[in-house]
Image (cartoon, rainbow, N blue to C red; front, side, top):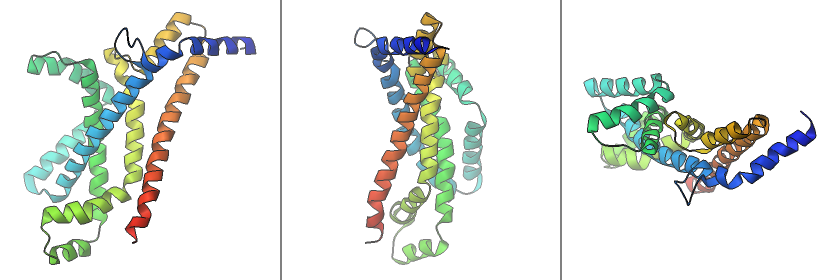
Length: 236
């Protein structure tokens, strides 16, 4: 590949930059990088909330309830995310007899699988906290809900934050699998542009790699900055 051809490929990217960023908006539905961010952020928030709840459940539930939760989480971690997106897209309308938007099914699938991994991260963090801290908190008159909320869970989340970030980054990358239900996120639009030009796949998908790297690196940097700002408060 000569330099002129390489340069022409980036001209194609420049000419389609607005399409890459927000798709057909405002004439049509929003797409591209903006939609990838919407999918990822929505899935991250829902997965984190469900994951924390499930992680607490793994810690405090006993008997058949604990076994049932383990079974559900194990099932979610075992199935390919591509298959779960496919299932949610075709099964939810059949079960509820309503038209479920493709974007919603993708967010739901990403959130379910993400929450399963986050749940075990929270569980690992909570059981790492020493038994003495639980006992000391109870001796102060706190009930179990207060002990978990104010003493145990903050420490668990802080210790497992690297695992959280890894899972959030995975959700961002997995959002590209939305192509299976024709959601016009960034990778889907990049593929369409490549199919139109047919001669610049290297440049186009190199651009895709760079954009995903920037998004994931920005997330990691943001979490690192927030964590460093909170560290001095821990020792005051």
